[in-house]
Length: 140
Image (cartoon, rainbow, N blue to C red; front, side, top):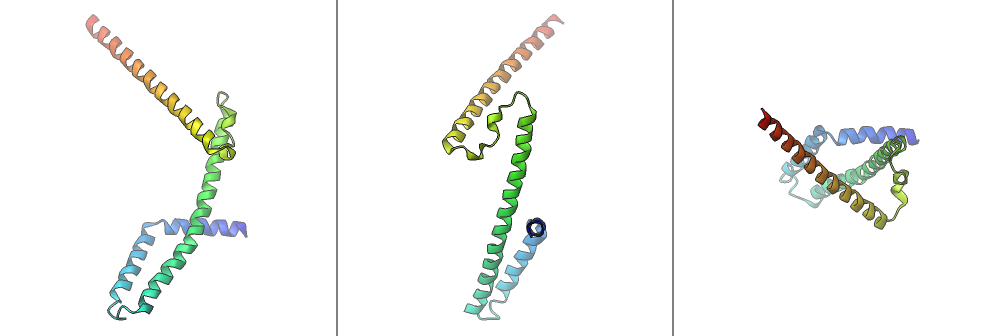
């Protein structure tokens, strides 16, 4: 049952996420709007589009959530494997799903500090390279 649902969910998400699906939905709305005068903009006419869009939305939400959850798990496994494979990586980064929001915030700030420091180091290296290039030009 799970395998059938997985295949159905992914195939459906591919179809729903296509340009053709958008164009089809747009055409349905245009046809519905154009038939308004024919049906006198009746309550039944309005109910048709409301019911149809509600049902489609209800079902698609579950499919999207399933595919996003599965994709997130797959991505997490790939990242965990990279962390495991790199000897200098911190293994505490594996299984971060169970840490508190405060701990995630602390780690994010730590990486922002590292990125800022790395940026400063790059600037210094760039300046050093430019200085060396200028010296080379003067020698010639």
